[in-house]
Image (cartoon, rainbow, N blue to C red; front, side):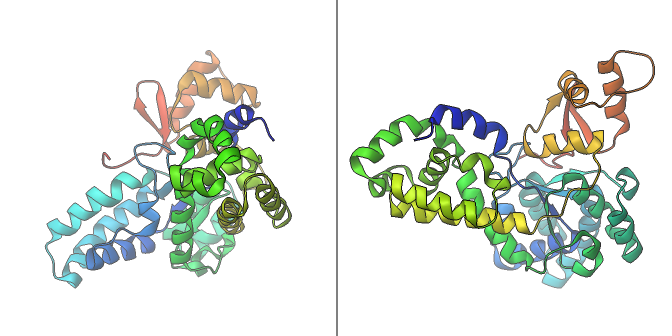
Length: 337
Protein backbone atom coordinates (compact mmCIF):
# COMPACT_ATOMS: atom_id res chain seq x y z
CA UNK A 1 0.00 0.00 0.00
CA UNK A 2 1.38 3.42 -0.95
CA UNK A 3 1.99 5.85 1.93
CA UNK A 4 -1.10 8.04 1.77
CA UNK A 5 0.36 11.13 3.44
CA UNK A 6 3.12 11.30 0.83
CA UNK A 7 0.59 10.90 -1.98
CA UNK A 8 -1.60 13.68 -0.60
CA UNK A 9 1.34 16.08 -0.42
CA UNK A 10 2.48 15.22 -3.95
CA UNK A 11 -1.03 15.38 -5.39
CA UNK A 12 -1.49 18.97 -4.29
CA UNK A 13 1.48 20.01 -6.44
CA UNK A 14 1.48 17.46 -9.26
CA UNK A 15 -2.23 16.86 -9.96
CA UNK A 16 -2.85 19.75 -12.30
CA UNK A 17 -5.93 20.53 -14.37
CA UNK A 18 -5.85 20.86 -18.13
CA UNK A 19 -6.94 24.43 -19.06
CA UNK A 20 -9.82 24.92 -21.50
CA UNK A 21 -9.75 27.82 -23.97
CA UNK A 22 -13.07 28.97 -25.44
CA UNK A 23 -13.54 30.58 -28.83
CA UNK A 24 -16.20 33.25 -29.42
CA UNK A 25 -18.44 31.02 -31.52
CA UNK A 26 -18.73 28.43 -28.74
CA UNK A 27 -19.59 31.10 -26.19
CA UNK A 28 -22.14 32.66 -28.54
CA UNK A 29 -23.78 29.26 -29.07
CA UNK A 30 -23.82 28.50 -25.35
CA UNK A 31 -25.43 31.83 -24.45
CA UNK A 32 -28.13 31.11 -26.99
CA UNK A 33 -28.53 27.54 -25.71
CA UNK A 34 -28.84 28.66 -22.10
CA UNK A 35 -31.37 31.33 -23.02
CA UNK A 36 -33.41 28.85 -25.06
CA UNK A 37 -33.38 25.89 -22.65
CA UNK A 38 -32.67 27.38 -19.24
CA UNK A 39 -29.85 24.86 -18.69
CA UNK A 40 -26.28 25.78 -17.74
CA UNK A 41 -23.81 24.64 -20.45
CA UNK A 42 -21.76 21.65 -19.30
CA UNK A 43 -18.37 23.31 -19.65
CA UNK A 44 -19.47 26.25 -17.48
CA UNK A 45 -21.21 24.00 -14.99
CA UNK A 46 -17.82 22.42 -14.35
CA UNK A 47 -15.73 25.62 -14.32
CA UNK A 48 -13.94 26.85 -11.22
CA UNK A 49 -14.78 30.39 -10.13
CA UNK A 50 -13.13 33.20 -8.14
CA UNK A 51 -9.54 32.43 -9.15
CA UNK A 52 -9.70 28.88 -7.78
CA UNK A 53 -8.90 25.39 -9.03
CA UNK A 54 -11.66 23.77 -6.99
CA UNK A 55 -13.16 21.64 -9.77
CA UNK A 56 -9.96 21.09 -11.72
CA UNK A 57 -11.56 22.64 -14.82
CA UNK A 58 -10.38 26.18 -15.48
CA UNK A 59 -11.93 28.01 -18.43
CA UNK A 60 -10.13 30.81 -20.25
CA UNK A 61 -10.90 33.14 -23.14
CA UNK A 62 -9.26 36.25 -24.54
CA UNK A 63 -10.47 39.76 -23.80
CA UNK A 64 -11.03 40.02 -27.55
CA UNK A 65 -13.50 37.13 -27.34
CA UNK A 66 -15.26 38.81 -24.43
CA UNK A 67 -15.78 41.96 -26.47
CA UNK A 68 -16.94 40.02 -29.52
CA UNK A 69 -19.55 38.02 -27.60
CA UNK A 70 -20.84 41.09 -25.78
CA UNK A 71 -21.37 42.81 -29.13
CA UNK A 72 -23.39 39.76 -30.23
CA UNK A 73 -25.77 39.85 -27.26
CA UNK A 74 -28.04 42.26 -29.16
CA UNK A 75 -28.35 39.80 -32.03
CA UNK A 76 -29.13 36.93 -29.65
CA UNK A 77 -31.83 38.97 -27.90
CA UNK A 78 -33.44 39.89 -31.21
CA UNK A 79 -33.38 36.32 -32.51
CA UNK A 80 -34.92 34.93 -29.32
CA UNK A 81 -37.30 37.88 -29.02
CA UNK A 82 -36.35 38.71 -25.46
CA UNK A 83 -35.19 41.90 -23.78
CA UNK A 84 -31.51 42.73 -24.14
CA UNK A 85 -31.44 43.24 -20.37
CA UNK A 86 -32.33 39.57 -19.87
CA UNK A 87 -29.52 38.37 -22.12
CA UNK A 88 -27.05 40.75 -20.49
CA UNK A 89 -28.08 39.57 -17.04
CA UNK A 90 -27.54 35.94 -18.07
CA UNK A 91 -24.10 36.75 -19.48
CA UNK A 92 -23.02 38.68 -16.40
CA UNK A 93 -24.36 36.29 -13.77
CA UNK A 94 -23.68 32.90 -15.33
CA UNK A 95 -20.85 33.27 -17.83
CA UNK A 96 -18.53 36.03 -16.62
CA UNK A 97 -17.82 34.60 -13.13
CA UNK A 98 -16.80 31.25 -14.63
CA UNK A 99 -14.43 32.44 -17.35
CA UNK A 100 -10.97 33.92 -16.85
CA UNK A 101 -10.35 36.50 -19.56
CA UNK A 102 -6.79 37.15 -20.67
CA UNK A 103 -5.61 40.21 -22.57
CA UNK A 104 -3.28 38.89 -25.23
CA UNK A 105 -2.43 39.30 -28.92
CA UNK A 106 -0.56 37.21 -31.45
CA UNK A 107 2.50 39.42 -30.89
CA UNK A 108 2.79 38.26 -27.27
CA UNK A 109 3.65 34.64 -28.16
CA UNK A 110 6.38 33.72 -30.61
CA UNK A 111 5.18 30.53 -32.28
CA UNK A 112 4.74 29.80 -36.01
CA UNK A 113 1.37 28.16 -35.38
CA UNK A 114 -0.05 31.47 -34.17
CA UNK A 115 1.13 33.16 -37.36
CA UNK A 116 -0.48 30.41 -39.43
CA UNK A 117 -3.81 30.87 -37.63
CA UNK A 118 -3.56 34.64 -38.20
CA UNK A 119 -3.06 33.99 -41.92
CA UNK A 120 -6.23 31.91 -42.01
CA UNK A 121 -8.37 34.24 -39.89
CA UNK A 122 -6.77 37.21 -38.19
CA UNK A 123 -9.51 37.56 -35.56
CA UNK A 124 -8.66 34.10 -34.16
CA UNK A 125 -4.97 34.85 -33.66
CA UNK A 126 -5.31 36.03 -30.02
CA UNK A 127 -7.12 32.80 -29.09
CA UNK A 128 -4.37 30.81 -30.80
CA UNK A 129 -1.77 32.77 -28.82
CA UNK A 130 -3.60 32.03 -25.56
CA UNK A 131 -3.79 28.33 -26.45
CA UNK A 132 -0.05 28.15 -27.10
CA UNK A 133 0.63 30.09 -23.88
CA UNK A 134 -1.38 27.56 -21.85
CA UNK A 135 -0.46 24.42 -23.80
CA UNK A 136 -1.06 21.63 -23.19
CA UNK A 137 -4.67 22.79 -23.14
CA UNK A 138 -7.95 22.04 -24.90
CA UNK A 139 -9.44 24.55 -27.33
CA UNK A 140 -13.21 24.50 -27.81
CA UNK A 141 -14.20 26.02 -31.15
CA UNK A 142 -16.75 25.42 -33.90
CA UNK A 143 -14.33 26.84 -36.50
CA UNK A 144 -11.78 24.04 -36.54
CA UNK A 145 -10.43 24.97 -39.94
CA UNK A 146 -9.25 28.33 -38.59
CA UNK A 147 -7.30 26.57 -35.83
CA UNK A 148 -5.98 23.71 -37.97
CA UNK A 149 -2.33 24.77 -37.38
CA UNK A 150 -2.82 23.99 -33.67
CA UNK A 151 -3.86 20.43 -34.44
CA UNK A 152 -7.40 20.94 -33.16
CA UNK A 153 -9.27 17.65 -32.70
CA UNK A 154 -12.34 16.72 -34.75
CA UNK A 155 -14.11 15.71 -31.54
CA UNK A 156 -17.32 17.70 -31.12
CA UNK A 157 -17.06 20.51 -28.59
CA UNK A 158 -20.18 19.26 -26.80
CA UNK A 159 -18.56 15.87 -26.21
CA UNK A 160 -15.44 17.52 -24.79
CA UNK A 161 -17.57 19.72 -22.53
CA UNK A 162 -19.48 16.73 -21.19
CA UNK A 163 -16.24 14.86 -20.47
CA UNK A 164 -14.79 17.92 -18.74
CA UNK A 165 -17.91 18.17 -16.62
CA UNK A 166 -17.70 14.54 -15.58
CA UNK A 167 -14.00 14.79 -14.82
CA UNK A 168 -14.63 17.92 -12.73
CA UNK A 169 -16.72 15.85 -10.32
CA UNK A 170 -13.67 13.78 -9.50
CA UNK A 171 -11.37 16.76 -9.11
CA UNK A 172 -14.03 18.58 -7.14
CA UNK A 173 -13.76 15.87 -4.52
CA UNK A 174 -10.11 16.59 -3.79
CA UNK A 175 -11.06 17.77 -0.30
CA UNK A 176 -11.98 14.18 0.43
CA UNK A 177 -8.26 13.41 0.57
CA UNK A 178 -8.30 14.46 4.21
CA UNK A 179 -10.47 11.40 4.82
CA UNK A 180 -7.88 8.95 3.46
CA UNK A 181 -6.59 7.49 6.77
CA UNK A 182 -10.15 6.88 8.02
CA UNK A 183 -11.45 5.54 4.73
CA UNK A 184 -8.60 3.09 4.19
CA UNK A 185 -9.48 1.42 7.46
CA UNK A 186 -13.18 1.41 6.62
CA UNK A 187 -12.47 -0.24 3.27
CA UNK A 188 -10.64 -3.08 4.97
CA UNK A 189 -13.55 -3.70 7.34
CA UNK A 190 -16.66 -2.88 5.30
CA UNK A 191 -15.59 -3.06 1.66
CA UNK A 192 -15.69 -0.53 -1.15
CA UNK A 193 -19.47 -0.68 -1.72
CA UNK A 194 -20.10 0.53 1.83
CA UNK A 195 -17.50 3.31 1.54
CA UNK A 196 -18.95 4.55 -1.75
CA UNK A 197 -22.45 4.73 -0.28
CA UNK A 198 -21.09 6.63 2.74
CA UNK A 199 -18.85 9.32 1.26
CA UNK A 200 -20.02 9.36 -2.36
CA UNK A 201 -18.69 7.84 -5.56
CA UNK A 202 -16.52 10.77 -6.69
CA UNK A 203 -14.85 11.25 -3.31
CA UNK A 204 -14.09 7.54 -3.08
CA UNK A 205 -12.61 7.54 -6.59
CA UNK A 206 -10.22 10.37 -5.73
CA UNK A 207 -9.06 8.49 -2.65
CA UNK A 208 -8.62 5.33 -4.68
CA UNK A 209 -6.52 7.12 -7.26
CA UNK A 210 -4.29 8.47 -4.52
CA UNK A 211 -3.91 5.07 -2.88
CA UNK A 212 -2.42 3.59 -6.05
CA UNK A 213 -0.39 6.67 -6.89
CA UNK A 214 -2.35 7.34 -10.07
CA UNK A 215 -3.74 10.68 -8.93
CA UNK A 216 -0.36 12.37 -9.01
CA UNK A 217 0.25 11.48 -12.67
CA UNK A 218 -3.20 11.86 -14.22
CA UNK A 219 -2.18 14.31 -16.94
CA UNK A 220 1.12 12.52 -17.49
CA UNK A 221 -0.11 8.94 -17.70
CA UNK A 222 1.13 6.71 -20.48
CA UNK A 223 -1.76 5.84 -22.83
CA UNK A 224 -3.36 2.50 -22.18
CA UNK A 225 -0.79 0.56 -20.22
CA UNK A 226 -0.64 2.61 -17.04
CA UNK A 227 -4.42 2.88 -16.91
CA UNK A 228 -4.91 -0.87 -17.22
CA UNK A 229 -2.29 -1.61 -14.56
CA UNK A 230 -3.89 0.96 -12.26
CA UNK A 231 -7.29 -0.63 -12.72
CA UNK A 232 -5.90 -4.10 -11.94
CA UNK A 233 -4.22 -2.82 -8.78
CA UNK A 234 -7.39 -1.08 -7.68
CA UNK A 235 -9.39 -4.24 -8.16
CA UNK A 236 -6.94 -6.18 -6.02
CA UNK A 237 -6.63 -3.62 -3.22
CA UNK A 238 -10.06 -2.01 -3.00
CA UNK A 239 -12.53 -4.00 -5.05
CA UNK A 240 -14.17 -4.05 -8.52
CA UNK A 241 -16.89 -1.40 -7.91
CA UNK A 242 -14.38 1.31 -7.08
CA UNK A 243 -11.93 0.10 -9.70
CA UNK A 244 -14.58 0.53 -12.39
CA UNK A 245 -15.28 4.13 -11.39
CA UNK A 246 -11.59 5.02 -11.08
CA UNK A 247 -10.90 3.52 -14.50
CA UNK A 248 -13.55 5.82 -15.95
CA UNK A 249 -11.76 8.81 -14.41
CA UNK A 250 -8.49 7.71 -15.97
CA UNK A 251 -10.17 7.13 -19.35
CA UNK A 252 -11.58 10.66 -19.29
CA UNK A 253 -8.17 12.03 -18.39
CA UNK A 254 -6.49 10.30 -21.28
CA UNK A 255 -9.23 11.34 -23.71
CA UNK A 256 -8.88 14.98 -22.68
CA UNK A 257 -5.09 14.84 -22.82
CA UNK A 258 -5.19 13.37 -26.32
CA UNK A 259 -7.10 16.46 -27.50
CA UNK A 260 -4.58 18.92 -26.09
CA UNK A 261 -2.66 21.52 -28.07
CA UNK A 262 1.03 20.66 -27.91
CA UNK A 263 3.39 23.02 -26.05
CA UNK A 264 5.82 25.11 -28.14
CA UNK A 265 9.35 23.86 -28.79
CA UNK A 266 10.91 26.63 -26.70
CA UNK A 267 9.98 28.14 -23.33
CA UNK A 268 9.83 31.76 -22.21
CA UNK A 269 9.28 33.55 -18.92
CA UNK A 270 5.73 34.63 -19.80
CA UNK A 271 4.61 31.07 -20.55
CA UNK A 272 6.42 29.71 -17.51
CA UNK A 273 4.59 31.99 -15.08
CA UNK A 274 1.29 31.81 -16.99
CA UNK A 275 1.21 28.02 -16.68
CA UNK A 276 1.73 28.19 -12.92
CA UNK A 277 -1.07 30.75 -12.53
CA UNK A 278 -3.38 28.72 -14.76
CA UNK A 279 -2.88 25.28 -13.25
CA UNK A 280 -1.22 25.39 -9.83
CA UNK A 281 -1.51 28.61 -7.83
CA UNK A 282 -3.96 31.15 -9.20
CA UNK A 283 -2.36 34.11 -7.41
CA UNK A 284 1.34 34.73 -6.69
CA UNK A 285 3.20 37.59 -5.04
CA UNK A 286 5.85 39.56 -6.88
CA UNK A 287 8.49 38.08 -4.57
CA UNK A 288 7.33 34.53 -5.28
CA UNK A 289 7.31 35.09 -9.04
CA UNK A 290 10.78 36.64 -8.82
CA UNK A 291 12.05 33.62 -6.90
CA UNK A 292 10.57 31.11 -9.33
CA UNK A 293 11.99 32.97 -12.32
CA UNK A 294 15.46 32.99 -10.78
CA UNK A 295 15.33 29.34 -9.81
CA UNK A 296 14.45 28.41 -13.38
CA UNK A 297 17.11 30.51 -15.08
CA UNK A 298 15.06 33.57 -16.06
CA UNK A 299 16.95 36.80 -15.35
CA UNK A 300 16.62 40.43 -16.37
CA UNK A 301 19.24 42.84 -17.64
CA UNK A 302 19.65 46.31 -16.21
CA UNK A 303 19.83 48.01 -12.84
CA UNK A 304 17.77 47.20 -9.76
CA UNK A 305 17.04 44.14 -7.68
CA UNK A 306 15.55 41.10 -9.34
CA UNK A 307 12.27 41.66 -7.46
CA UNK A 308 12.09 45.26 -8.74
CA UNK A 309 12.82 44.11 -12.28
CA UNK A 310 10.23 41.36 -11.93
CA UNK A 311 7.54 43.85 -10.97
CA UNK A 312 8.47 46.06 -13.90
CA UNK A 313 8.28 43.05 -16.20
CA UNK A 314 4.90 41.95 -14.83
CA UNK A 315 3.46 45.41 -15.40
CA UNK A 316 4.64 45.27 -19.03
CA UNK A 317 2.82 41.97 -19.70
CA UNK A 318 -0.87 42.53 -20.42
CA UNK A 319 -1.82 38.96 -19.56
CA UNK A 320 -0.91 39.38 -15.87
CA UNK A 321 -3.26 41.34 -13.62
CA UNK A 322 -2.38 42.81 -10.23
CA UNK A 323 -5.51 41.87 -8.31
CA UNK A 324 -4.07 43.13 -5.03
CA UNK A 325 -0.98 45.20 -4.44
CA UNK A 326 1.94 42.89 -5.19
CA UNK A 327 -0.25 39.85 -6.00
CA UNK A 328 -0.80 38.70 -9.57
CA UNK A 329 -3.22 36.50 -11.51
CA UNK A 330 -3.36 35.35 -15.10
CA UNK A 331 -6.27 37.28 -16.59
CA UNK A 332 -9.38 38.37 -14.73
CA UNK A 333 -12.92 37.37 -13.87
CA UNK A 334 -15.11 40.12 -15.31
CA UNK A 335 -17.77 39.61 -12.62
CA UNK A 336 -17.71 38.42 -9.03
CA UNK A 337 -18.87 34.89 -8.27
